[in-house]
Length: 125
Image 1 (cartoon, one colour):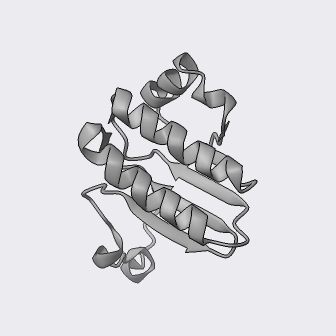
Image 2 (image 1 turned 180 degrees about the vertical axis):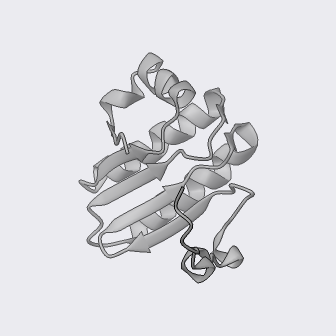
Image 3 (image 1 turned 135 degrees about the vertical axis):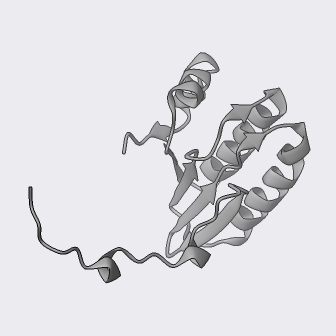
């Protein structure tokens, strides 16, 4: 057993940077738009989701990549699927590549069943 003392300072995390509620979050970095998909993407969230993301896509010049982060996502209903299609289509209209990251098995199965996986690239890390 290694009895070296651990330097706790190396493991400090700024709690303000951790968002435990998994709400939608949009962040633009250079030519990439990063979107955290909420815990549930349902009829309630679909319209604001589409309006926000499509507005950013249409008003952003030089955007080449859209990353949809599904790490928090647990449920997507038919309205949520429709919202994803609208966002993906808006990105493709401006020649923006679309990626899905943080995809769990449930979301991956849903993307495959609905063939949305043919409209975006699933990142496995």
